[in-house]
Amino acid sequence: MTNQEIARAYYEARIRGNSEEFWKDHVSNNIGYHLPAHTVVGGEFRGKAAVREAIAAIIQRSENTFKSEILDVTSSDCHAAVLVRATARRNGKVLDSRQVHVFEITNQQITEIWIYAYDRYTVDDFWS
Image (tube, rainbow, N blue to C red; front, side, top):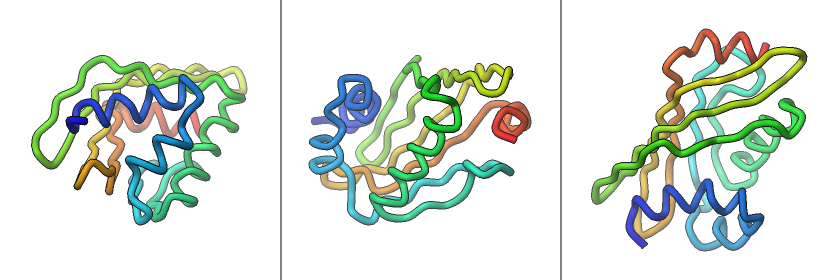
């Protein structure tokens, strides 16, 4: 798989419900997940279990409404960048956020993910 295909498959595996196989084959045991936010969902997470817990918390806190729509993907030999539209509903609030998710990929395994929101203040407000 190319880095672009791996980045796309990261989102598609969750939608198709076969994320276990994807995480086994394409996610490093020591993955880093970086979500700059001033809320309980933000922070630095290291390792498969910690990253999966962080993602599960986002889904749970949004009452299972959180979605990531891929708008575009570009990649190089070491990275993939995914333009994403993240949407969710929570406590009467609506999130509609354009974001860039940057993946570091080594030997067909995701080793780091950085999440950058266009308007971080709106994202912080949604999760607070």
